Length: 237
Length: 237
DNA sequence: CAGTGGTCTAGACCACGTT
DNA sequence: ACGTGGTCTAGACCACTGG
Image (cartoon, rainbow over all chains, first blue to last red):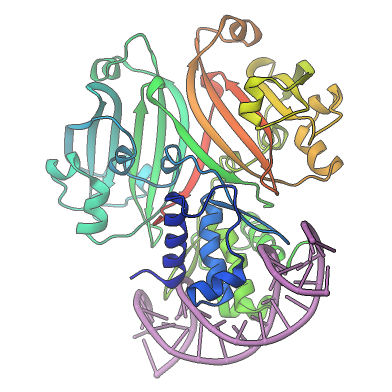
């Protein structure tokens, strides 16, 4: 059950995506939206905040909310999204191959990365292929106390789907770091590197709603297949 | 003049940064904060929203607002920030050298990139050096109708400072795209590339409050000197 | 001047977690 | 049972934009 302001924002986003509301035009004013959706001003403003945060509109005092030209292809790459969710937004055939799935007792490194005291962690390595070319190598470390019973089928399908829908856990936020590193010999063998010898390295730490860290991922991308798009507002922190 | 909720959020962030409020502890409840700051619940919630967006806290129903361990070094890299603002957060000597500053009439490409119909645009090329090594090449295109009278002194100092403080314009949001590209021969000569032949390419489009596009920038970084950190919340868009 | 979004208040009910 | 954050309402005043 979505809340009222979420339903309103969803409705507005749908209308913008379907171009029922045109880019470069102004949305109905907050007053009009109150009547249209039978909601209070605050609820309308919460709905508009979602559009604002996601780059759909830009508000102007005294004028209104201008609909921006969202680059739909580029957009979903931002935020916390699983590989499978991303893949849907791309028009190529995507294949995942699991090359390692092991359950290990905590060691010094995982104590540090996952803040685990005891128990086991899963290590999963997966190769992602686009149109037959092996271009991404993902290495996942998961706290097995939080995410138990991972099978190769789950790993090949979607970890996020398993975590959110099967286990009922809520993924909340992630920290990511992007750097460029030299490929190791092993990586050169696992991926179709052609003439490249660098890899774009995305390290991410993913957290649940209660702020517990459950996943640490190193995702390495062949440079020519890497693209990340960001929408950022200037903040006065 | 900052608004009340901005002052409250600023005060809370200061206290977290100074560790007067400890990481992994809970903030006072919204009810208590209302009394502490003599504000309504809504105002408190707006203040907490800023902390939430920036990864300072994580809220839990029935429990409270948990203070997260913000990676202070990494953080400021996200968002819309000028090079000079970023440089302050780094502990190395940073030098900017302007190698081109020209005013040109609009041509086909800039019509497309900056959506300009008429008038002139500035082209600025700058080399950024860290500790004596030339590692970044920035190429800026600015709408001269919006940002006039750019001098070499301004370009060498801070464009954003000139735009916001001298011209009084409000920078609002930006779209950025990260890719990796091959370095051209010219780029290899302008930068200290060592053995590298790839560059991390960050294209950004920067907009003012009225959603007018005024700047298009291509920033190319030597791979080993590139690092981008992102904090993202999972959204149900 | 009227209309817009920005801020702030006071009150209400709910779902949730802890006790 | 109680306190927490999540949602929603109704009303108020302000600063800004436009005619």
